[in-house]
Length: 69
Image 1: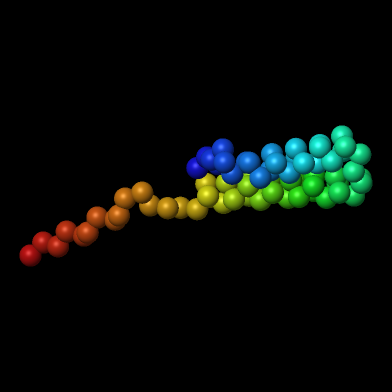
Image 2 (image 1 turned 90 degrees about the vertical axis):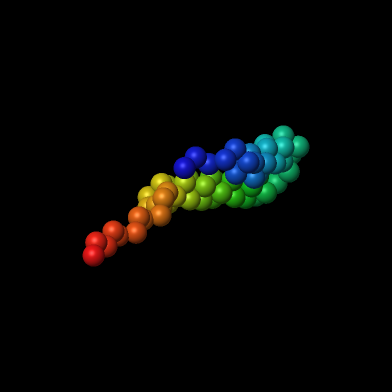
């Protein structure tokens, strides 16, 4: 299962906010916190994607057994 592109939007937003806070001269702690949140979110997306691939989900219902009289 592929990750939909909208799932990456929060990660991209956190990275952009981190870059913006660096360029505007905000505290290094704020920038580090934003990048850390982005890293955790990215790891969570990758873990979720891996879990989705490993989970066995039937695509069709099992056929009913044929009982002969």
